[in-house]
Length: 379
Ligand code: ADP
Ligand code: MG
Image (cartoon, rainbow, N blue to C red; front, side, top):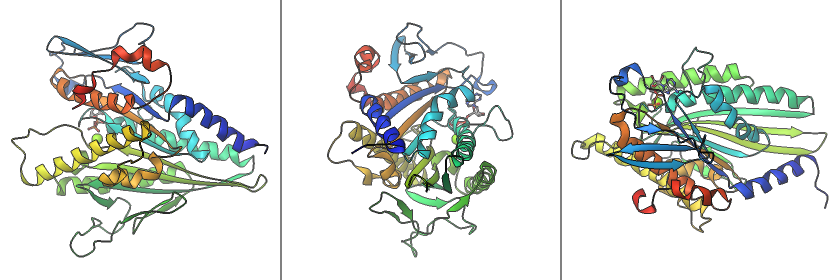
C-alpha cells in the first residue's frame, strides 16, 4: 500500500515521535520582581554552561548543596515570550495535522504560569502562548485553505476546582455544578472515536483569533468573579482551554481531527500542614491529588504500563484521550528565583524530573544521568 501526502507526513512524524518519545518537559525561571525583595539577591538558581547542559540544565542551591537537573529546554529569566513560543510552535502546529496536544503550566503560585500561558493582557510583546498559538493556528488555516483544506474550530474553557468542573463560558452565572440536586452536570464521557463530551459545557464555534480573545476575556472575568467568592479560587483551580480542530480536504478525501489543550494548573505549593483545616484542607488535598495523578499518568504512559490511572482525578480523566495514544504532551515547569521559594522550586523541579525521567529511549538519557535526582527523593 502506497502512503501519500498527509498520511506519509503523519507516519514520518510518528517515526520521529517513536525515537524521541512524546512527552517533553521545559523549565522556565521567571525574573526577580521588585516585590520579591531584591536586596536578598543571594543566587539560589544558576544555569550551567557546559556544552552538554547549555540551554537545558538548571542548578538549585539549598543548604550549601547543589541540585542539578536537566530538561528538554530551560528558559532563563531573560527568555522572552517569543523565545518560549518558538520552541512550542511546532507542537501547536501538529494540532492542525490531527494530533491531540496538551500543554501544561506547572509551578507554585507566583512562579509565572499565567504569564507563560496568557501573558499580560494588552501588551503585545508579553503575549503568552495561548494567544500566540491561536494566532498561529488561524494564520496557518488561511494558508492551508489554498491547498483545499477547510477547518472548523470550537472552543471551550473550564476550570476544575475541588474536583468540580465550572464552565467559564456559560452565560448562566451559577455555573458551578450543584453536587446535591444535579449530579449529572458536566459529566465527562469519551466516545469510541476518542472524542470527549462534557455534558452542558458551552462550546463555541470560532472563526478568528479575535473571537477567541473575546472568549478568553469572558472566561477571565468569570474566573475572577469566582476568585472573590471562593477564596482566590484561580490559583487553587486548574484552567483548561480546549480548541477542537476538524479539517477536511475534499480534493484529497482526507479528514483530520486535532485537539489543542492549554492548561494553567493550580498552584503546586504545599500549604503548611498544621495550619490547613476545613475548606482549605479539602482544597489542598484536591490539588495534591490531581497533580500527583497527573504525574502518575504521564509516568505510567512513558513506561508503557498496561494500566494507566486516568480515573484518579477529574483532570486526567477529562484529558484521557489527549494524553494517551499518539498524542503529545508538554509540561512547562515554572520556577520563581526568590531565595525564599527554594524549597518549592526544588519540589517543582523534582515533579518535572519524574515526568521527564519516564521518557525511555534516546541516548541523551545517558548523558544527562548525573542531572537526575535519585529516585528516592521524588517521594
Ligand atoms: P502564577 O500564575 O504562577 O501564579 P503569574 O504568572 O501570575 O504566576 O506571575 C507572577 C508575577 O510575576 C506576575 O506579576 C507576572 O507578571 C510576573 N512574571 C511572571 N513571569 C514573568 C516573566 N517571565 N517576565 C516578567 N514577569 C513575569
Ligand atoms: Mg496564575
